[in-house]
Image (tube, rainbow, N blue to C red; front, side):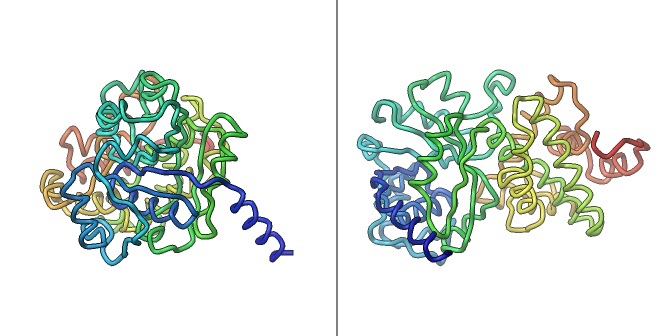
Length: 351
């Protein structure tokens, strides 16, 4: 029976038309997804932002800065020119959230009409979070003819790049459309599960980075596994509270993009945001930590935007507020944690 199911899946894959996919952004996750979609049988172009980066990737055959030790196959096209977008059937946006709208404005005239986007960057836009919190919202306002999918889940780029088993949620409001897209990108080692809750999936992917910073602080202060498990659980409760208030479906928070991504990001030092929290717990300043990093910790900017949403919705979000106070108000880690631990508040768990 298992063998028959596998054969049926392979036959379905062969019936899927090969797509010309352009992945915009040659960081760790963009490169990993380019490799995953190449394995799924598509023609893939990886588009770095700078010509010199494209030249280096083509010359070295490896993304040494973001995915060292992972060879780039010869059939992966690497091209920084905007013209590579003109024949795309699908565009994957794998650039830092706060830069993505500028990039979209730059490349818009090169895009085919109604070409779909898959947004994989995780964060909240800081420019106007109350009106346009997510990239999908910005595209809906400024490029309404382009369908927008959101891909999010418990994924470390290095493992996807090395073809280790992984799964993620692919979301779009149209059930038939998202199922067809997930089927076309499916691979035995990178499974996509369709969802119609785009708002919930995008929300979960964005805000979990803030809570990963909190969990990093917990680990850095050696508060123990009990405290970490409690913190992850309460973080999920906060995320769900605000997410549902913003229109997300409650079940989304129990899926890959919800609890799955939260568990991965909040319990592994591979997480850029968790490792940032660990360094903060050592007493290092945010500027000092960032000066040593090449990658973006999206939780920093998202924390500020998230705080505006929390105020607007008037919801109790203790953990998110604590991270905001540390990152953006200059409060010490010690004083914020002391305040959280000393708070005397008896509440029912589901509240």
